[in-house]
Image (cartoon, rainbow, N blue to C red; front, side, top):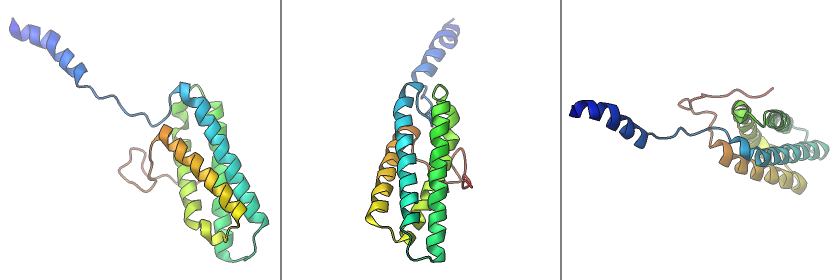
Amino acid sequence: MKTIIFKLFLLPLVAIAFAVPAMADHPDPGQMDDVISLARDVYTNAYNAYYTASRERHHFTPRERYALEHLRFYYQGAYHFYNQVTQYRHDPSHTEWDYYRLVRSYQNAEWTFYDLHPTWRVVDAWNRARQAMDNLQSYYGYYDPHDPNHPHGPVGQIE
């Protein structure tokens, strides 16, 4: 009798008590207004950095061209992410992969950023985009695109 009571009543209670909630890699639907605002900040500042850097380009080296290309991929990825977040505001789980692609393009642009020989205007726009990316991390979590142990694995670059 004791084992039946234990199996029927106590085991489910113990299982519920020790259940660990799964960490979501996407924001809640109630947080999407903040995410949309941050995505807009990322997009506009990434675009401003790219546009200003391409207008103020002065070295014309292959490395500078390569860095501009990465900055362009980043602002295009930010634009795509902004559109997806806006479109799927009621289903934020759909935006998870878009965020990972955005992080990958951001890191590629960051690795080549100083090959641009940026002026203060470009650096200012870049820093504002970086701040918005840091704030987005609080909603989606940290993601290292080169980590093979991440549940989503490495993500390719947006082209």
